[in-house]
Image 1 (spheres, rainbow, N blue to C red):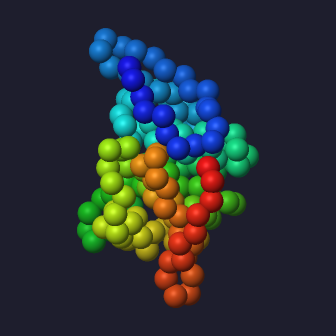
Image 2 (image 1 turned 30 degrees about the vertical axis):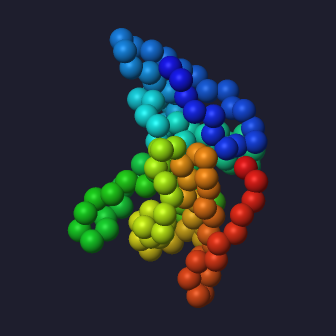
Length: 144
């Protein structure tokens, strides 16, 4: 299995398993094996980033939280909480997906329900960071 090198400064220690012709990756917060899709590869980098680099506890990371948006049930990729309050919403795309204004607007719509102070939109190669302000979103950058 050939996985793309993603744009993170750190190298993380992932656990993999193969069953028949499918590969799985171990998800630390959920303590379970998940099918290794390109999007999951990006999400697991973010999970390890917040656990090992930022020092969050596994209980502060919420994956695939259900939200209802315009009558439709959606799932958030990753929500970082602080004292159970939403802090950072991370929307993960596969590395081949280009990040556009449209993909950011999707994330912002999800956040209109969640109310996180920050958004990270990432395909693992490119990361878009924004803070919620009184006037909308303010974009910023930093190294991962």
